View 1: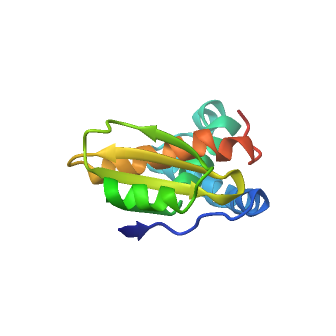
View 2: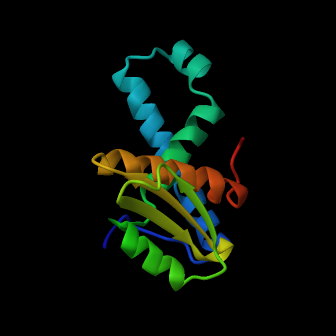
Length: 142
């Protein structure tokens, strides 16, 4: 089993703190992207909304989530140590690769399976984990 990513919030409060801290980074990222796209001030005002910045913040947050990567056996061993946790799994049970993110405060694990596309599975998993777990505890605009 391998682990990648920067954080796995132990509490809902820790998730909220990290999410809130990413606000300025999301704003700067969107501003610089708009600049690179040569938006004039009027176009910037029209197109760069609060929802656009919130989307960037969600993506930044999700991209930093800690993810475990292993085979089906490693995932089942992990599950055995976390009985009672809700398991949300995407993909096919007939492939061996599994990526998962554990959210201890929610006693939930979100998993995705993969055959060859590990990177795609990791990114899909992170988006799913945000939508299934974190969007309920962070102050999203949606």
